[in-house]
Each structure stands twice: as C-alpha cells, then as structure tokens.
Image 1 (cartoon, rainbow, N blue to C red):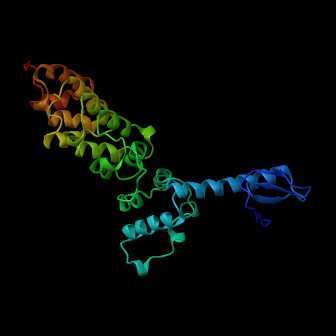
Image 2 (cartoon, rainbow, N blue to C red; image 1 turned 180 degrees about the vertical axis):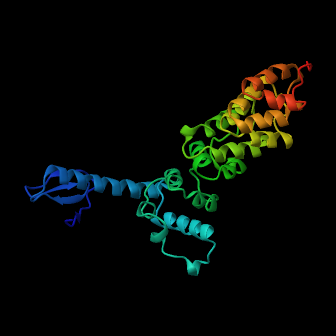
Image 3 (cartoon, one colour; image 1 turned 90 degrees about the vertical axis):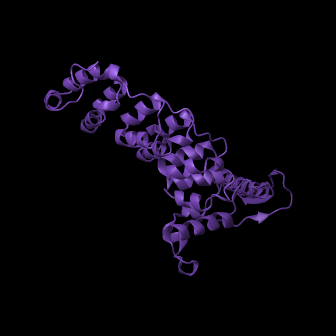
Amino acid sequence: MFELSKQTNPEVLGPVSDKEVTYDGTKIEINEKNETQIEEEKTEIESDHEQKAGEERGEIMTREQVNDFLKRGLKFFRGIRNSEQESLEHHYSNELINFQGTEKEFALELLEKHRDYVIMENIEEFDGLDREVALKMMGIGDATFVINHPERFKGLVLDKKFALEAITPSSGGTIDGPCRSILKNAEKFQGLDKEIVLKLIERREGWSFFHSLVRGNFQNIPLDKEIAQKLIETGWDGIDLVFVNHKKFKKSDRAEIRQMLIDAGQSERLSRHEYFPEDEH
C-alpha cells in the first residue's frame, strides 16, 4: 500500500492536483488509482480518526486494554502463571486481539466466540455491560454468573420478563443453562409464575422444577391439571414425575389427571398401584 504523507490541516480540502487529493489532512496519491481505491483509503482514515477520538473520550477500548483483558482471561481459564502464558495469538483469533470498539461490543464479541470467562475475570473493570449482554451471556456463557451479579449489568432486573427471554431459543446459544440456572436460583427472581413453570416444563426441565419445589421455591403455584398435562406431553420423564408426585397435585384435579394418564397409555400402571384412585375426589 502507498505511504500517506500527513498534513496539519484537519479539513477536507478536495483535489490538490491531478496526482493527489487531500482528505482530512492526509494526502492520497491518485496516480493510477480508481475512485474505489480512493474511497477505501478515505474510509480507513475516517476509521482511524474515530478510533482515536473514541479512545480519548473513553468510549473505545485501546489495544492495551483489549490485550490486558485477554491476558487475565487466559490466566483465569488455563490456571497458569504469567511466566508460563502461551502466545495470545494461539488462543485467540486476530479479530479479538485487534478488536476495535466499545466495551459492550467487545463483550458481545467475546460471547460469540465463547470466551465468557474473559468477562467473568474482568467484571470489575467492564463498564459498558447492560441487559443485552446479560441476556446473551445467559444463553451462551455462564447463566449463574449473571444471576449472581445483576448489578454489573446496567438496566438488568431479574424478573419474569427477563426469565422468559432467557429461556427462549432466539436469545442465542443453548437454553439448558438458563433454564436450570433460573430454577436453581428461583428465589432471586421477581414475579415467577405458572407461565414460567409451563415454559420450563416445555424445555424438558420437569425434574429441575420438582427439585426447585423441594428447595421451597414456587410454593405459590399449586400443582394442577394444567401442569400435569404439560408434564405428560413431554414423554416418559414427565409421566414418571406425575406418578411419583401424585399426592402433591390438587385433589380436585386428580380424576382428570388420571384420565390424562389413561389417554397416554398408562392404564396398566394405574391398575397396579394406588396412583390417582378412581374413588378419590
């Protein structure tokens, strides 16, 4: 690439001669260059200026900050001493080492590359984390970490709305992590109700739900025929849960639950045991 000669004038001056133009204080030679090449070089100059201006305002991370964050993350992940750290280039793509952008953008990029441990190790220094980052980390990274540190994510409230978004596949990544983390930490959320329970059961988390019940969570939500139906629809695991926990379901719903089990092909099992007896009302 040709070398650029710097000018002191910061303004766009337009064409200087038939052989060069000056853009934002930088001479761009135009001998044998087409307009596309000139535009690309102008864009590169603008990007450099934006990067420097952003760094001065404290919005854009410097290269030193990026490397420091990555080094601490690597040490945390590998559990090795500084003197034994391997080359960063070996563990991180060039896109991460040469990252340019805000701390929030860096965090989102880290999550895309499954480097959530870099965020965890540098959580005290990240200033730009918000609800969007928290939601992505729930799906791709360590969901329990987010739940235990909501104050680190601007605008994050652990409530029903956030829980529903976290257990929706469109949030990115897998949904097993957030489902189980929410169930294990249900007491930290506000407003979890029957809708959440039904969604979690849909995600094949029936066993985790009953474990959460044993720990004293969801005591305000009665086990009724709707929950039983949802469990039965998930297959054998759900059916077993209905059988094993038959005495916990609302007595007034047990006749209907019994019929649901018969419809699911469980007549023989019902006849062998005192599950949902026919005369119970």
